[in-house]
Amino acid sequence: MRSYVGRHLAVTDLDFAELALGTPPELWLGVEGETDEERAAREDAARDILADNPEMTDDLIRLAAGIVQEHPELFDVIPLARPTGRRRPSRKGVAA
Image (cartoon, rainbow, N blue to C red):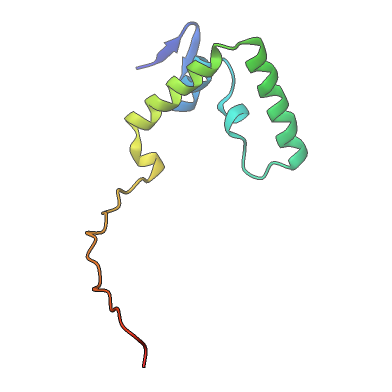
């Protein structure tokens, strides 16, 4: 079965994210191995897009929250047990 968003074919999760945002996810997330100059250019472009579309920030947050909720395994989050709080008895006294 094929999935279309508008007239665009969406095959992967990244395709859906790009079509939902109107920009490639790499613009917001970066790519592995990018140089400082590439990162600065990407961040400048992202700032310009957000300045032109202030509502996009809400869309990005909503999309990120949905991804976290639907795919928590992507973030490899493991709840940690809290220590029970057993304390050592204090030894008050004078050192010999």
